Image (cartoon, rainbow, N blue to C red; front, side, top):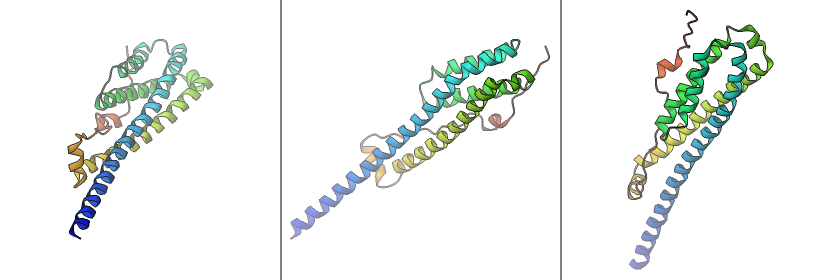
Length: 186
């Protein structure tokens, strides 16, 4: 009789262990999926940027510094390797795009150009999708990191060396909220 009880307890502990391990793996995979969603939106933005730059070049040729900043920021993203580095690079690109669109306000012909308006709308839509993807990513990271810290799943996470993930954060929260400063004085 005691043997059956011991076997039952061992089976329950084993099933609990398997369920907790699978929940951790599932959470980790959700984090990876959420990051993939962000990558898709970044790719969409990268593909739009050259078209926007070409359209703006025709109207604002003397805004070379702004155009070079956007191109440089876009190129800089390709050299990132960690979530934190990527977040910093993406924040720089977002800032340069804000500056680019602020500059476009000074060119009525450009603002009226249908192609530019379409590209601007697509980029704005993409930025909104990136923000939504970031929120989803951060919520899945929160869920995963919480599982890594609470008992008893933290014990399983330690046994399998599961590490916490970094949140996708704005580098300079207050700086990001400010409007870009444009100076046309030469």
